[in-house]
Length: 246
Image (tube, rainbow, N blue to C red; front, side):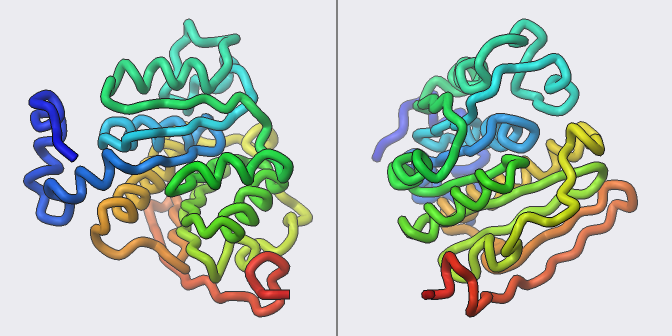
């Protein structure tokens, strides 16, 4: 797979990076990534993956841009209010990097449609704040043997994890937490979305390019108020209804 002169200049900082280089950049160009949720986490993740030269990005989200989104969903502009998120985001990604192909899936991701979306890509990023969607995405990733990069934020805290087979996301969250919070209800500092969304993109680049050690089977937890972070291991649940073999 060859690069145009524009691509060589565009990805120059990757090409001279030992852990990426020409081979890693070719892998990025050949890769396809599904981003579930074009919101606070999906926005920065999509921008960085498009800038990195991921060949095909699929955006799945049924919502339209709302004024309240602009505080943290940095891919959108004031003129995008009222427009479908996937369509507005796709236009900005194409403007950022015309070498990237962007597909739009303006749907609510659920068990009945997620399989086809997951099966058609190499890697999945989930930044939704809906547990039903998260569970459906995780189950599809396990079934179709796709790696899942999962991110979540609330208030001042965020987390990122990578799930490849076992343990899966349901090993970490077997049921919907009884006091599950949403950003609508409790708020979230805007810049935190950029931090966690960028971490998700970084994990995706590492996975695709074969660089470093991904957060496989681990969860990175970041506290924006204190500036502290810690990484914990996730154990595989032998009774997990998704990956436990029952």
